[in-house]
Image (cartoon, rainbow, N blue to C red; front, side):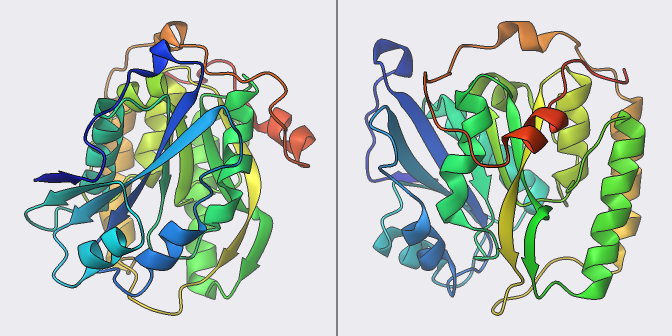
Length: 281
């Protein structure tokens, strides 16, 4: 069931503005979701309109109530908890349906800096990337436990090896997509999305950039990451690599660039992280 505060929308190609939809996959995040929504910048550029979308992944607490009270524009309620990968899949699809020119996803647990969304958008609006990720390891990390850090290193290194290019944070929960990238993205695993999504998009030729972000480990709620993570994610990576993909979807990219949109201070690192063509097929 979809609930919307603003049901009507105008196709973005009929205006000079860019429509950005920020979606938050959320399962029982009543303690943090309101704060995340309040931190999302709405008016950082007169040419950009921002709407928020909650993907309620079968929550049994007051997640939806708190989100609407904090100003969420749209809520898509899933009947059961289908998993983070499934929630992100729904978020991308629903954002496209709502007319987004650019789609952003950010975790609802308040670990990621929603106020840095304008920086995440910079490479896209500058025409340098189709897909961006906020990198904790290029920025600052507060409170991440050692086993989580080691797991991030392992899976990021694995992605970098498979794609034969530099990636610094393959598990980031803060990402942005052009409409074309969001439409093309395929997530084959309901449990998680992080690794297979990047492999899928880069294999199709979409350009990646990473920007440094501030990160703080969650103090409330519960992470879904456990020792079972490795056993569930590695088979999904193998399955994604064995699947044929349609190379060349980047030719269908629409121009969402904004002249003179400011790039963040990390521009040299962004340029180095951009990819022009898929390294594997």
